Amino acid sequence: MLKRIFTRNKNNTTIPDEKAKQDVPAGLMTKCSNCSQIYYRKEVEKNLHVCPNCDFHHQQSAWERINSLFDEGTFEEWDKHLKSENPLHFPEYMEKLEQDRKKTGLNEAVVTGKGLIGGQPTAFSVMDAGFRMGSMGSVVGEKIARAIENARELSIPFIIFTASGGARMQEGVLSLMQMAKTSVAIERFSDAGGLMISVMTHPTTGGVTASFASLGDYNFAEPGALIGFAGRRVIEQTTREKLPSDFQTAEFLFKHGQLDQIVHRHEMKELLTTLLKIHNHNQSNTMSSSESELISIKGGQSV
Image 1 (tube, rainbow, N blue to C red):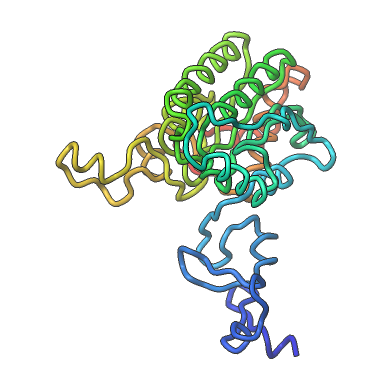
Image 2: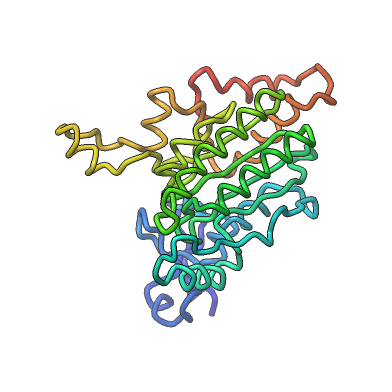
């Protein structure tokens, strides 16, 4: 029966045949938005939401990313209780927030906390594009600023994974103020000798790109991630020039020096572990040859 339902491609990845696509329950299958290949959903989840066929990096939820990176049982969440209000009395804003809370299981578009990655302590913020498109409102900015301050007080590194549509329009100028607040927190953290690692995922845009996402000691991105401030059409209309086809992609930014490295999701934990070990003051001054090769990220080679 199973042999009839499933066939296998050249990469030994399970792909349902045409009859199975019609027979299986809804939600069992998923289709890659890049190559349109259809897969068994559980298999793609085990592959960290990376397409087995074209290697496209689909979005991960905040907790999927945390569970894939942190050592089991070591993550401690911070400021879970914080929730957005409606300071500008924007119509239907509270109803939309409540819908996203039910859909994602989160109170806001970012999860913060601390834990161990490869045995190394670190503070952490991970944004979730499933909650208001990861937009940055007052609570998102406050949680990130608090996480940075906690990292400074604990003298541990800070890692942030960004995924955002930019500042949250329903909170107006209060959202834009989060750019300054988080940037000041990062400056204080840096002045205290703290290490910040920023990983930009698809998409990272608007005020998030223009503030904390670009202020890491190391600025990384996942392959193919959309990263930018204003949209392509706005820029083309303003400059009256045709932009390159790869404009505002991770690859374009890496080529022009805005990123230190493009890192495949399957290799992210190994790289972060190595960086944390190197910058951990309690570690030995000696470094293995494999770690030396891995840390040579400023020389223009992709991991």
